[in-house]
Image (cartoon, rainbow, N blue to C red; front, side, top):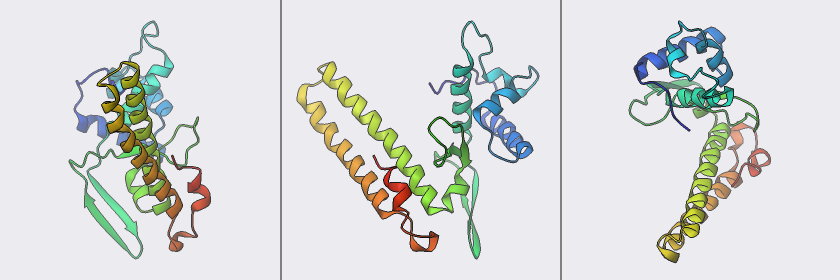
Amino acid sequence: MDEVKSDKLSPERVAQEVENLHTSLGHVPTPDELIHTASAADHPLHQLFEWDDSKAGHQYRLMQARAILRRVESRQVTIVHPPREISVDMSGAGIGRYIRDPDAGYHQQGYVEVSKIRSDETLTRKAVLTELRYAKAYINRARHLGKGLKFQGEQYDDLLLPISRLVIDLCDRLAEAGSPPELGGSGQESLAAASC
C-alpha cells in the first residue's frame, strides 16, 4: 500500500518537488493535486506513478500520492508559540513533514504540516489519537489473524490483548484530557468522539 513506483528520484528531490507544489498552491497539496501536477509527462514526479490504467486506476494513484506525501521528511520545524518561535531539528526523527489533517472528514482529502499541528495542542491530540486508532486496528487485526491461523495458541492473543487495552486506555485518557484552558476550553466535546 505504501508502494512508490520508482526510486530514481532522491528523497530530497521528491521533497523539493512537493514543497514547490505546496508553495505554488499556498497549501499542502492533496493527493489529487499531486496526481494532477505529476500527470505532465515532463514533471519529475511523473515517474513515481503508475499511469497505465490497465494496471492501475485513479484509486491506486491516490494511494501512491499519499505514500509520497507521507515520505517527505521534516528537516527543520519552527514552532510558533507566542511570544517566541522555537526551531527544532527533526532530521532523522522518523516524522514526515506532512500528516493526515486531523480535522479532515473521513472521505475528505487533507494533509497538514507537522509544524502547524505542533503549535496547537488540540490538533496535536487529534493527530496522536488518529495514530493510536491505527495502532489499535493493526494490533486487533494481528490478534484475529493469529487466532484464525492458530498461531502459537492462546499465548499469542494473551500477549497482544493487553497491548490493545493499553492503547484504548491511552486514547481514552487523551480524549478526556481535552485541550488546556489557554486554548479555549476543555476540548472534550471534539475529542471525545476521537477516542478509540
